[in-house]
Image (spheres, rainbow, N blue to C red):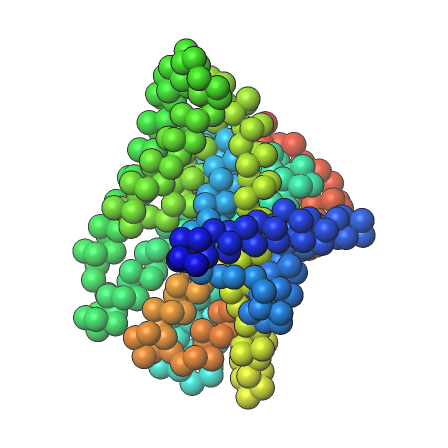
Length: 405
């Protein structure tokens, strides 16, 4: 068989796992009152590299699974109210600084305590810094809590957190190659990243209705949906020239279009695509990891410390900063838990440090364990903290701003 036909068979297999096998696992967890995303992660763990090895993980599968999470974050953006998000952006920025500094600081401290030199400890801090909010988003959608003050806050922080993680990694690369932080490079990354993100959001908020109204006049089926998705994929491609993740562009595009003409109808249809294809991302994330190789006995205490710090950093940094700003205790706890998951930037930071010789394989394996642990633990914890305690529609902060409708 040719290479193309073999890839097609791989695609059919992963879709079978996504549409049938994971759905059965999802049903199991739904029946016992747990978030269904755990079923997706468990599917990857069982049928992936750790155990049976039946789930193929190649570049095509990774690309398609990444597209699934792009659709999920696009949907999350569509479900976010533009006016509310922009009004609260300074609040999200303050909390992001607090949680990023706490997570990075704990990682750096653990590195120094375990005898790593400062450069190496820097990358251990970077491993713990960035949130990957995909699991939280799916769980919040499932329990109907995405459109809450805490849900909006988690999404806002996660967007800015990707930018801070990018800056940290770029600064680390500068430290590797020039033995010093290149302030000009860091400033350029910050300026370009934030400017591009802002242009997407503001531009689509102002002109998005022109796109959807134009599409509605066409005589082809689902033209509004197709043109909206076309806008998404075009921008997700173009942001690579600004060294931004397509995931940042996905949320920005959804946010910019959230109040455009026809966006509600589009959101309902995008939700179907997100439910179908985001599953691939969660399965592939765990299927690509061989847990057995990550369990090295001599580093047990290091692994336990860094995994504990992964949770504590976000809980202290995100939760405590939120509480100081005026979020009630239960809301601050929900925000901290929503920031637990790690994925791509965690692994990227570990890989950059490892490939440069600053980190040993144990840190890269620790990053894998962090990704698995936080993604498995977050859904049930998030469901518990959101479905217990008081529910808030509006939260008045000490700095004079109100979060929520």
